[in-house]
Amino acid sequence: MSTVDIMMPFYGDVAMMQASVRSVLAQDDPRWRLTVVDDGDDPAVPGWFAGIGDERVRYLRNPENLGLTGNFNRCVELVEHELAVLIGCDDLMLPNYVGVVRGVHADHPDAGIIQPGVRVIDSAGDETRTLVDEAKRILYKPRFDRRLELAGEALAVSLLRGDWLYFPAICWRSAALKELRFRPDLRVIQDLALLMELVRRGERLVADRTVCFSYRRHDASESSSTAFDGSRFTEAGEFFADIAEQMAAHGWPRAARVARLHLSSRLFALTNLPGALRAGGGVRPLVRHAFGPGRVSPRARRP
Image (cartoon, rainbow, N blue to C red; front, side):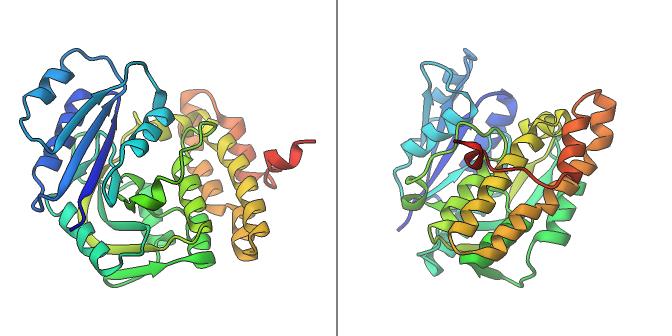
């Protein structure tokens, strides 16, 4: 029977991390193993883990700081079981999470990407609705009753039109995930880059509507801060230009056109303009991303 490797790259708020760990300990299905890879230096954290007393919990502290991308890649390297999750250290699993994703895997053993149902919470843990998440739900997420299976160019088009997945809630077939690494040149769009590479390699996505995960949305996140200062959109413009070239070379012209347009990313830049104005920076990159014709791929610029 498949065991779920729950990998948690940790750096930051200790109380939120502890709540996330407790949500794993509270799973109805016991077939999981939690690995926390600590990229920080809080002296109280190792002792807290030593007191848990559950052999399924593994705590490791990096001897030196690896940074966000390095720590994610370290987590991927440590995966050993058939299924894996890269949970955020501020997110929460509902008690049914492991049971839900194992059930989907049993029905669709060849699927490399399993996206269960997600609710969004704020920094206080209360369920919330944001413009970003409502856009995902209403504009970009495909309509389906219980489960949806997508692959190939149809999946590429769906994700490039608007990434409606919640990366920390995804359960991966480990064999597919371990062939790849997060790109060190990307800060906040690594998840979509990794997803698109898996799709290009032929992996299938199964989405299930059963809600079993709480995704935390708050302004302190890396993605929120880089949205306001504009750096997220400089990165995004270069990524979409690059992925458009890849999709065209792969023989997926519809996906290439959607990547060149990247309409959802342009709309997201527009919604962040008021916040950038209040913060006193990042306005020019947001305007350029929202209204510009698109970027030339960095690869295309090389002599």
